[in-house]
Length: 449
Image 1 (cartoon, rainbow, N blue to C red):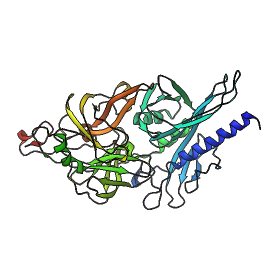
Image 2 (image 1 turned 180 degrees about the horizontal axis):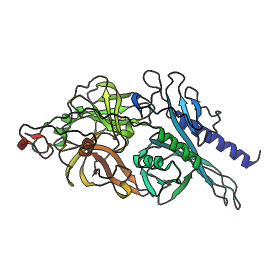
Image 3 (image 1 turned 120 degrees about the horizontal axis):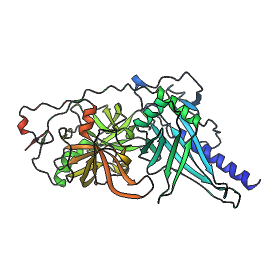
Image 4 (image 1 turned 180 degrees about the vertical axis):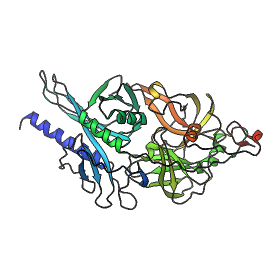
């Protein structure tokens, strides 16, 4: 068997395994043994797509088997569980480039869901016009990736190869029926980047998927209360015991995140990207006092990247005091609490670096008109969805992302962002609580003692 034929067999097997892995990565069973779709509630599931070609696949087979042949690239795939009858749609795409001088092929494989994209990069050697190369490699996406579509640049932030798709990108695809060119830009570090075009057939399938999605999340009836807080800031060692019991860890077999109790009826807030794309309908919730329960998603806001969960049994913990009347100021002391890499109750300190609009390279973090709280309190994967509080323990925002590199691969430090809780409550159309004596309220809307 000649060398080129051997290399072709190697990469065919690699692509099959990657496709299988992408397929299996959204195949986890819920607590009742049934596949659940966390992206859409029972009242707003994606309607069955009845027009055009739809490839039927069953989730209850071993898609990790490398012998499984996969040749349904660019097609809209309906994945159904034989056990429960639940289903969801995905599109798998493969794009690559070959250097005809040295025979090196570099490519990517992506899995597009209703609001996430997951991907792997790969390379393998071959013989070109001048020389032959050898070896092969594959790895999940990392750092910042860029999507270019219809004259717009969308920066995506994520981890473990999975990225939340901005609502602006989804809307652009829907409004143009996926008929404009789409490219993905990946950074390899030190300014070395690669741009891959996404095929027209893949775009058509992605557009059909986005167009079929139902947006029927009903805003929950949420109420907050005026809290009593310290008039002046407390030392961190005195403040943490007061607020840590209200912070939770959120876990599935695939993902880790943080959240916090924010409403009088015990609802939990976190990031949308913590609870979407996980392939399960139930989330394991735990607190620093070792309370445990299961929670379900009751609301998602794709634009501001937040979600609300309802626990099956109410946690015995107070709600966090909330700074609902004003934005923080640059230089203000802040504390982030969360579960980086699943290490619950981790506390970091910093200051507000700026309160800014999401412009230029920050466009992918929030829509126009929403303010981002930039701070330097260290956050890591697993901190997502956790609270950012001031020195009185008042909630300022929902920690969302830490930027560790630029779009062209240059390293960054201490640049972290939270979505302002003021803007979250505006999106929920939440009314501020009424004070009996407004003169007693501090700048955040709470009573200082």
